[in-house]
Length: 265
Image (cartoon, rainbow, N blue to C red; front, side, top):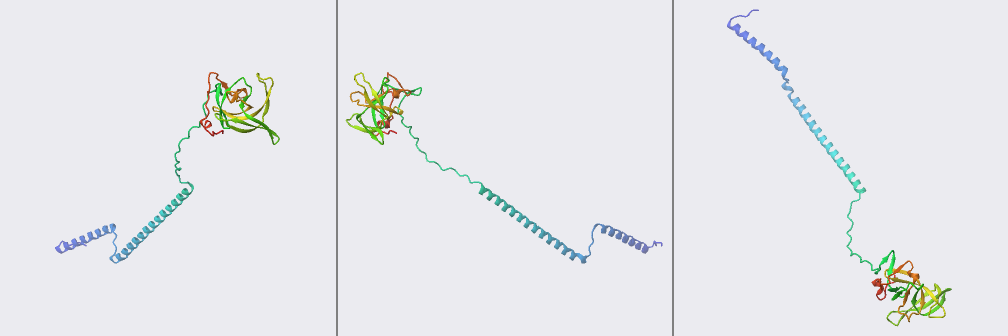
């Protein structure tokens, strides 16, 4: 079919070409965009709103589950801490002790020692524990048995055993202290100034010289005509004391023994 070259025919041909181009452009646009009929826009809007509500619900559920998980973890942690607190004792500081004054060292008396032996002079202060009296004793290595001044010596029996009652002087006075002791043994004493021997009673007495305390045997004898009430012989000196002949009163008794009513413990 041929086209007319008349103006009317030319116009028709232009219109046809433009219409064809419009169809081609519409086809290209349809490939890039989704063309939705206007009648379906309401349904699409409802669907979007429904999905949005679903998302909000899911977010709320997730937040609730997260909060529950946090609460469970907090409760578990609290349980563990309570269990630890029950098993572990809470530390506490010890009570503050009041300060006390340091005790004074006990007065044991004064005495020098050599190789474990007490060094004594020719004269020493002698504490007789049984009578709670302090005498002056002469140290004599020539005498075998020690001796003490005793008066009114009387022997008697008690429960089938031999005892003796005697008086010892209180130094510096005319008074006496009466003691009773069981007889340890009897000894025979021979003196150069007498023709006959003398039997003397021996008793055990507790005494102290310096810081040395001991129980030893003493013969009972009237020493009123002698200078010293006590004689320390070899039965005490042996293995216990050493004599320094150049000294007197080389030892000193504890102060508590030299006071009135001294302690004999």
